[in-house]
Length: 334
Length: 244
Image 1 (cartoon, one colour):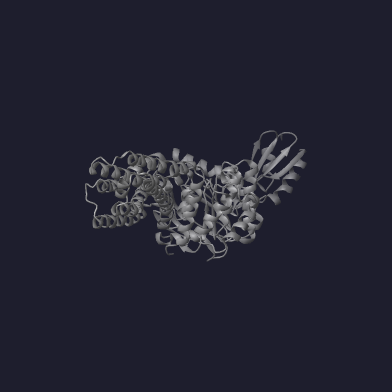
Image 2: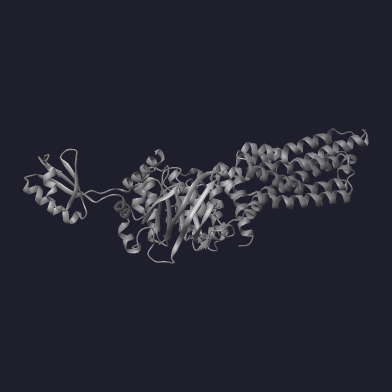
């Protein structure tokens, strides 16, 4: 289930930009973090609108977690600037920023000798929430853990601990919720539960900054994604990224191999190029698949070919990601 | 955002709940004080009235020094775990992403080590005095109840604990291993005991003015210790573990 349908309504302004100016939950401008000589991330710029689910992708060591820690005021940036939940990222603003955001780190970080409710109570008090007990009840309901409130956290499975961590992150009704690899190490069922929770948060209008290296997760949950590999490689909606990197194409599957495909496809004006694939299928480069498909079908029928299928070939976000990461690997080799 | 006692209370309550269910802490809190009660009692029970005043004074000095080892050892064990323990468990990062300030976090941790220590140390001292009054020869008991001895115990128990706590937390913010933190914290907690030992053995004549003066110095050191540890509290180093 892709979220792109709803995205189109809200984020039409295009690549890397939420539609309405002045409503950005995060504004990051040429941000860099170095540890001595080592660059964690460099010259990173992007914006995230309120209510947006923003995916932050990249291979291990790309700087995703360091970016979250920097925006969460745990680390000081080396250069550049950022505004988090409307507050400028400066050393003195740390407590104010942290009061408006929540960060769920990769490891749940629960106090295992405390119960679920005691863990949440501690954090409700750290945020100085006046209606702490109501918030705890609501957060537990949101993650379907009300009945486990009095269980010690050490008795919970990894998936349940992750849900408690998510409940903890929701306590303060944050303006921006940072989720760092929320499904890392979870089995498929637990991952699906976390995905459903994130989707329900989106429905509630929570701004979510999701770091992950699970591409299907990002494609499924995020309005827009950024791909980071120390430097920012691309920002945009998944379909925009695909369009940027790959030409549109039709995949034609026939019963038998064509005798002279070159002359056949050259006579179809909509086809810009072609290549043969395994088992009597062909990939045709086209600029408008909807217009090209009938024209291709007519030409094939006229040539006496038996058509099994003509479909627009889809590139996944994984294709986009691998294309970029491979480019980086190639560049490093050179 | 100003200093919040509510956030201090959150840390304190969390710590106390955690201690209650931590076998190691329960063991440290219950068994060690018992050892430091039994040994000095044996010292006093074995003392004979016929021996010289100097020998009796030495036995009393040793007994009272045992009492002061409690506020040095217990909080150093607890506080040494305070930061490095959370880091090892992975609980430090979530706490540091809340609005809590280093000063609040540290005061909460320090109070969580101080309050149980005071409760245990004073309780053990009370039992010691009660047993002394009931079972020890009256001549020796009256020497134990001498005003300066009791004052030194009452005054120096929280001050030595304060030193031990800040030394332990300081170590805890800088090391990356819980065991090393415990050992170093215990070492760092010992210096004030040296001065108290000299007073207990009457090497330094324990006048009221001297005791109050030393207490004032120790109090100042405790307050400065808090400020110094707060200044040493580097979120970046704690989160990255110094592995940058």
